[in-house]
Each structure stands twice: as C-alpha cells, then as structure tokens.
Image 1 (cartoon, one colour):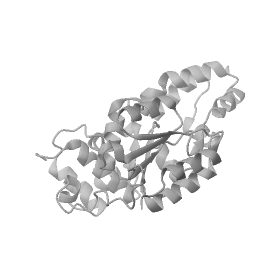
Image 2 (tube, rainbow, N blue to C red; image 1 turned 180 degrees about the vertical axis):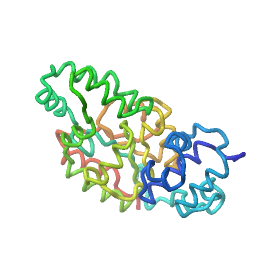
Image 3 (cartoon, rainbow, N blue to C red; image 1 turned 90 degrees about the vertical axis):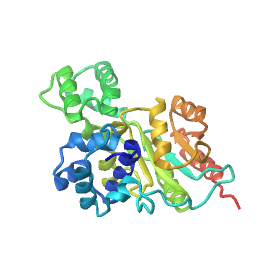
Image 4 (tube, rainbow, N blue to C red; image 1 turned 135 degrees about the vertical axis):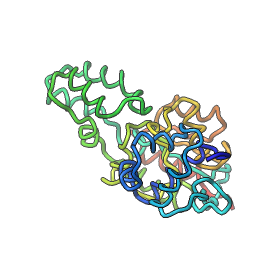
Amino acid sequence: MTGVDEKSLGYRLQAARQAAGLTQQQLCQKAGLSYSTLAKIERGAIKAPSIFTISQIAGVLGTSLDELAGAPGNANAQPAAKKRSKSGVRFVFFDINGCLVRFFQRAFTRLAEETGAPADIIETTFWHYNDAVCKGEMSVADFNKVLAQRLKVPQLDWQAHYLAAIDPIPEMHELVHWAAEHYQIGLLSNTMPGFIEVMRQKGLIPNINYAAIVDSSQVGSIKPEKHIYQAAQTAAQCSAEEILLVDDTRTNVMAAERLGWHVIWFDDYRPAELSKRIRVALEPAE
C-alpha cells in the first residue's frame, strides 16, 4: 500500500481489532496470517504492507480498506473529545502496574517458596530479561524457559504467577469509569505480550472501550523511551498539551512532561487521595 503511513495504519488496525474484541492470535487465525506478520503491521514495521493482506484483515474486522488506511470518513478514527478540562486535557492515559493494579513483587516471594530458589536470584533474572520481553524482543515462552532454568524447575508460567499476585485498585477503577464518561481514555503500559487482554478479560483492569491501548510489546519501546510516548500521542490523535499521563514511576512521568504532556504521579499507598486529586485536575472547562 503506497502513500500510507505505516505507523498510523498499525494504530488504526490495533484499535479496530481491540474494538472487535479479538486478540492478535484470534485475528491471525480468522485472517489466515502469521502472528509475526500481524505484530509487525501493528507496530508499523512493515513498509507498504500488501493491499491483499490489509483487505483480508479489514474483512475479518468488518471494516473497509479505506477506513484502515485512514481515508476521509474513517470510522475507526478517534471520535471528538467529549470534554476538555480547564487545563486543556482531552485525553487521559493510565499506566497499569502500580496505578490500576497493585504491583506484583509478591510473585517473587511465592516463586521462592514454591521452588526453594533464593529471592534475589528470582528478581535478578526477572529484571535482567523484563525489558526485552516488554519490548517484544523476547517471547513470554522463552522468558519462562530461562526463568525455569535459573530456578532449576522443569517449567514455569510467569503470567499465572503475575495474575495471582496483583490486586485491582478499586479507587482507580472507579476513576477510570468516571473519566471515560467525560474524556477519551487510554492505557499506556510497559507490559509483556498478551497480558493486557487477559487482565481485561479477568476484570483486573476496567474492561471498557478504550480509545487507545499502547502496549509496549507491540510498539517495540518502553517508557521512559521517547518513541513510546510519540506512538501514544499518534494513537490519541491529540497534541502534547491535550494529554494527561497518570503513572506511578517518576522517570516515566518526567519523560512525558518533557514532551509537553500533563502528568500526575500516582502513589498506590494513597489511592483515595490521589484519585481525588486526578478528578480535580480533570475538572471540565465550562
């Protein structure tokens, strides 16, 4: 497809797939594509993808080639903002770990208890490979193999341990639902492949119709790298000063602020206080 911005095509395709309630694997099966091909198209890594391939995808998603390509009248384009805050915010991105769910460190303790391996070996191995998995450079299956080898166990399922270790933060789930009534809402997360979809299905994060989901493993970049913020801004279809990021990591917040975003640092030890502060910051303009 000549004359098409591959990055924008990827974001529109991802949004259409998520709106259809399909995982990447499910779309691949229905469209007869390989997982790697679809993942690369969604990342914008394939220059001038085949019209035939995009037409196949459009057919499965119940949309048109023109709509995915961004022609005028695109049904998958971001709708107009519902409201604008007094500070000019139209779009709110929420981080997941530490914002919508309490973090997963206790998974390390459980693994230590189950395997008898020292906790420091578990954490060291995890953090050594975590960035590569969250960038999509290493599969979860390969990560499981490496971690199992280091812990000297036959097999290991990190996703299962992660899901068992996290707890939703009720105040933030309520806030997300409230914010979605007034603003465009998205997720911006450093995460391993497939985790967001499973968390939505299990109700660990609000399963609402997000205007954009920026998954580091699909973008190929993690916060605080500049590229993932640029990808998020493109997906939001807003200018920098119209975006608010809520994140629990100061380096991530500062990186967004340097790009001109509004930011709020979230502390999951004070969820009620911080959720109220976010509501105040999102007070709609008259």
